[in-house]
Amino acid sequence: NAGVMQNPRHLVRRRGQEARLRCSPMKGHSHVYWYRQLPEEGLKFMVYLQKENIIDESGMPKERFSAEFPKEGPSILRIQQVVRGDSAAYFCASSPSTQETQYFGPGTRLLVL
Amino acid sequence: DQQVKQNSPSLSVQEGRISILNCDYTNSMFDYFLWYKKYPAEGPTFLISISSIKDKNEDGRFTVFLNKSAKHLSLHIVPSQPGDSAVYFCAASAGSSNTGKLIFGQGTTLQVKP
Image (cartoon, rainbow over all chains, first blue to last red; front, side, top):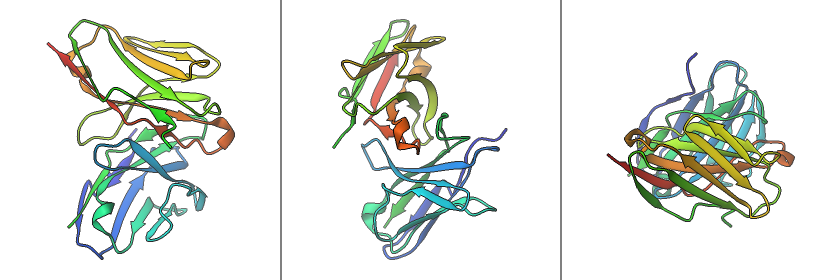
């Protein structure tokens, strides 16, 4: 049973470009969470999605960031017009329900030049 | 507003001894707590959890203690092994939020010396 998959593992973008981060949850998991870890900090919740629905996006910056979890395919976190402050590790987690343990992917390390 | 705090950025212990990692929280609505371990360039790995209806949960070398009145939890690792060297994150969630989102502490870097 494969774990949570994330790609790419590393992503380099120049300021103003778009970044697309993908997450495939564990088999049987329909709940996906995105977290961001800035250097020297803990993980911060960004958004919680179920299939085709955004349930809680209280941790998402109001501009430039969006997330989706389509009926088919992986969950996508999109960052438009990236800035240097977006450089961070972005982790995806999945769980079978909100009451069960979240399992994390290996993360995508975004570097904005 | 840091709702989950790990006040010790780092901890160093000798192999075979006990490691005690601490975590404090401020939100009384938190009712589920977890510890994750993280190696560099990897994602967090789930270690152990505890519900607020319990005050202790044990899994092999790992034991988590919860003191609700003090809003404090701790992770005990006995005996510590060099492979335990990693960053440990405490996390909490509130069942009432109905989303399961986790609030993380800043992490404690554990070094176990051979």
